[in-house]
Length: 433
Image (tube, rainbow, N blue to C red; front, side, top):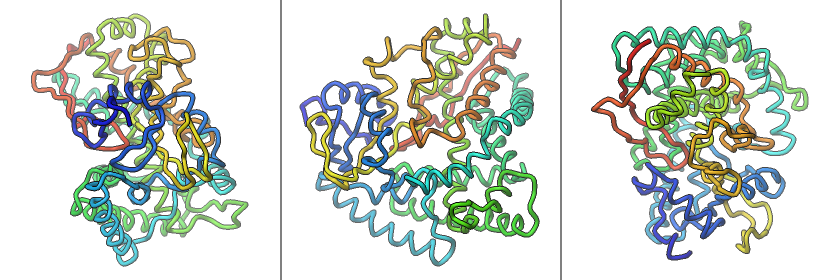
């Protein structure tokens, strides 16, 4: 650990709110950095991240990415953090008991699998997001975006996160799953609780609360699973419940379904797009030249702008991998069983890969080459749908708003979270067209 990296702490509120200076330091001073607060090796350079993601045999997903698994993965070296981790381990045992007694112990979700089992489950799940199904959803997403704008456009102001950025992807994934719209606020509360636990910044009591909320969600979805088994429907969720995986010779178990519902479907299918929609509006207010370019030629510049938003803000800042056997990277020994913290957000601003990496460049070539949706075997299943949601969200803004600015009461507070980057609120004012 160098003098430049000694004070870096991703649990610190200031660093959590703006991690990019810390990423810059690590990329240059310690591209493979042992975080004393977690024991994880933090990887920050673009090419290193791609190399790790391209080698799932050596760098596996066995550590998992779901809420409880990340806590088990932490092996801190700082004495105070070791004490906290011991307390967290006891809390995790209590949470496991809660699942066993009151709900279902979630099986490893798609993002926590490797090899043939991952390939086989992904093949089945990918039916939900195949191009034909995404295309069928396009009119719904466009119509929903317009309906949301209609609800506040006459006011000349809104709190963008709750008014638009949350409901657009959330109701879209609900539509895709066949969940009643009136139930979506409850599902949002459950996904919020799940995300908070994933973030590794809760108190002991808050971890238990999050687990109780997930169990509430399990009972809600269990009733749907059982109904769909008796009466299949023409919905994606019905397919997931009822279609057998040929190689397994069976359909998914309740535990496997519960593992997918929160992590991959409702959190993965909404949370990251919400955060990108919020981050993009911040960029448009801060960079009026970008706003003018989008207004002048949205069809040319919107696709690149969408990629730049995901690259620059990277709603999923990082995920984990486990080292299968002793290896070395940049002269740093990585023993078998150690955990890598793959900071996609740092790689997405690597000057070795991108010219002027902190700038929005609407003429950037190879804009889709970023790591905002992952890379390799675990590339985000819902990336195509997310891009359409972002397109209709920003297209609606450009079409229906003449000018945009921050309201006097706006803040830049981010939810405390070790893995995700999410604005709490964004108060804006605008002049409708």
